[in-house]
Image (cartoon, rainbow over all chains, first blue to last red; front, side):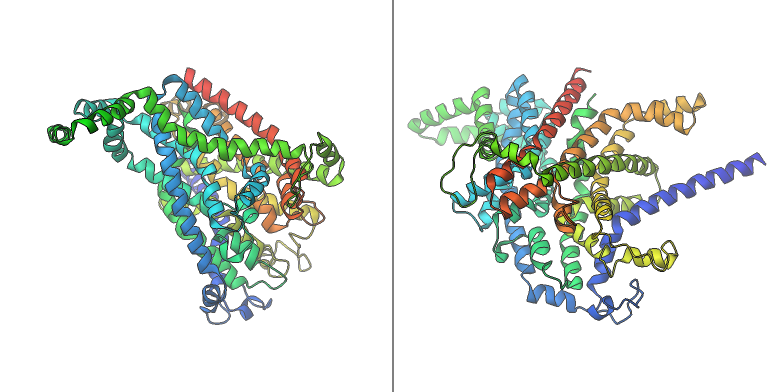
Length: 285
Length: 321
């Protein structure tokens, strides 16, 4: 009797566990599923309120994708995003890698404080800085140019990436560099030849993180740019495609899905390291 | 390693003596750890000072002036803009909305993240897929994910309404206009924000939960501790520092965010979802009144200072122990 009860209880626990996981997964992923489904539906199907929206009441179509890539500037926006992303990642690495190494190895006790100070600048949000930066950008003659974004975006990638890489460098045993220096490398040479190759995982995390942030950025992009041809994807789609009373939901959802899901899958590989960076102060204790 | 030594010697022998003196001095500089350290960190510091420090001071200065987007000159007007802006009903409404938006969404995120993290702590089939799907809202560009919700909350074609009606939760005449009615709009904006922040909080908490040693749970189980006792006397106290970190980041990112609101409601209907960040954008950039926009956005700053203060305390305590 009690064995049956225990089994029932365990079954119940497993059932509620399954239920919780299912509910959360649906909550998280449903909007993306809905984007995908909408992408292949005909407008007449979408706009007929008598139809069951979960089914294809008319045959699926590629028309929405065709409109998106041939009648809007979506392709251009993807390219802009990629272009800005690559350059911002490059700048971030150039600034953050040496700075992180310096903080981890060369600046001693003061380095820790300085590292926390740099990390805290990550908390200063674009919504405080965008007004003065709008003026600075226009004084530099960069208004409506992608270069304004390339100049400003590292301001939210560099602080966090420096912090993240600092943790990585600290985890590398000092003996390795010292051995290289005994073999005749300078400190800097040891850094380039020994430490960097060992930190490829950390550097890749920084690349993924920076690129994702560039794709996500919205406030600066909307503030500095007003030519449709210079938008990035995350600004172009909501400001230019969502306009007026007529929404082309099929194309719009295609635009959102294409720019969201592939990068999310890629990013998934790096998320653990990224979280370790967030919580490094709290976990140490 | 011997290979390296040989190469170095070969290089050293092939360099002319005069050049050797110069590279010698450069090498000495590069070998001096203190100087190398300064040299390597200088570009990053310089960049941060120029693109975060300087604009921040500029924001302070603008808020005390009467600058507009097109103006060539500006004059110092002291606290006039602050005084003026505080008195407007729109500002007060936005401040209230910001607080409601932040606190409710963070409370919901914290509870849900805790439940979800506990559920994900167990091993089960297909966990990697579940994790990937749950992370999607946070990794996808926010503005684009929010457009997905814009479509799902559409006044005529809302799939949520359709489903609830089909299942029977909504009666035949119930058809809420999610983004068109003040309270519903605020609720929708909060829900979408929770959707977007839940993954980050969950993953942070999960990291904390999985670092709790197993023997603690076993010992408690032997002593006959039930689920709730377990939760409140072991799990929560042990992950508290990490929970605080999660809440802190959530607070900062929510308090200063405007993207979800901009895409879903633009602050409407009747400014009932207007928050400080979006008000600052509409005033400063759309309206061109840089001074007033800067003054509004600076009201975000005290929260950041408080967050930084708590963060520093946690970091210091973690270092001591």
